[in-house]
Amino acid sequence: MVVIHRGRMDPARELAHLRRRMDRFWDEGFARPWERRWSGCDCLPVDVYSTSESYVVRTNVPGVKAEDVNVTIEGDTLTIKAAFPEPVSDVEYSVQERESGEYARTLSFSVPIKPEAAEAVFENGVLTLTIPKAEEVKPKTIKIKTG
Image (tube, rainbow, N blue to C red; front, top):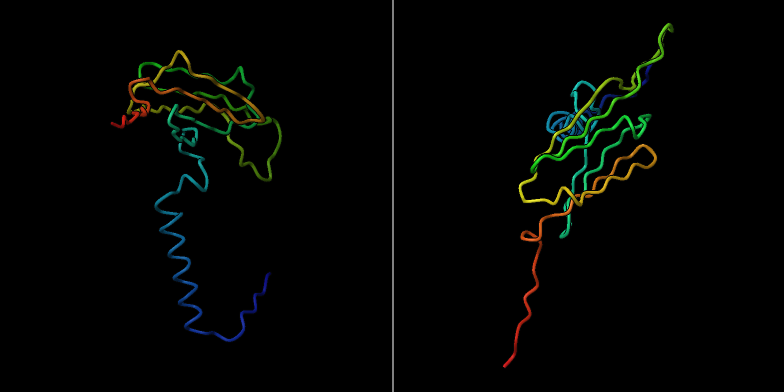
């Protein structure tokens, strides 16, 4: 049995605590539940950012070998599939939180890309894809002539 001593009850402090919890619920728990834990979503969580030259896609695939990750690009659609190792069998787990099985993620790009120039780097359980943008969508610098 655990006994928790809280001291004297302060209604203002309790309301402030409730407000912080509600703010955290709306900011993290309800609006972005996938940031806390991705179990059950059946997809790989990714970070995607854009530079002037390319898109960069990163995903964590801990415990997965490079040969167990499949990356394909068809048109403007990227698909990443990874097979996480199955848990140890014939044991009784006290805690079992690591994911196992097949997971995938499909992303579509809103601007033309050059799939033939895409690069994939797998290091320390992190897959980083760099997918160049097509020339027609890259920013162009226009030189101004003076008279």
